Amino acid sequence: MFFFFICGEHTFRSDVPGYEGIVCQCHHCGNMAARVVKSRPFFTFCFVPIIPFTISGYKDVTCNICHFQQPLKHRPDVLAMANHGGGGGN
Image (cartoon, rainbow, N blue to C red):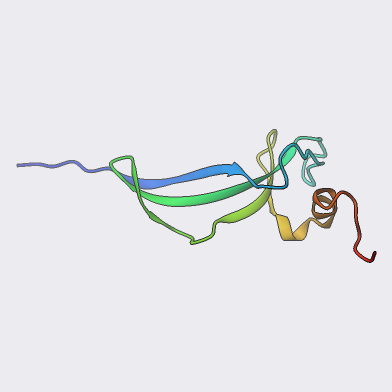
């Protein structure tokens, strides 16, 4: 008897609350096509997500054209856009 099982990895992506509609410049290709996305990779068994690889996921700035990804914490310009341009203070 032979059983064939398929194992793999799938990443689920969703918008980050507070960053919806924010489009910024990609630091790789220079296009205004980057968005903030939360990624959660899962181990899949027969195309069913079973085990998450991370608990909280990753918040990245992802370009829709060149698919370059950069962690959100390394993009102070995007963080300032979400705070409506506020730099702190009063």
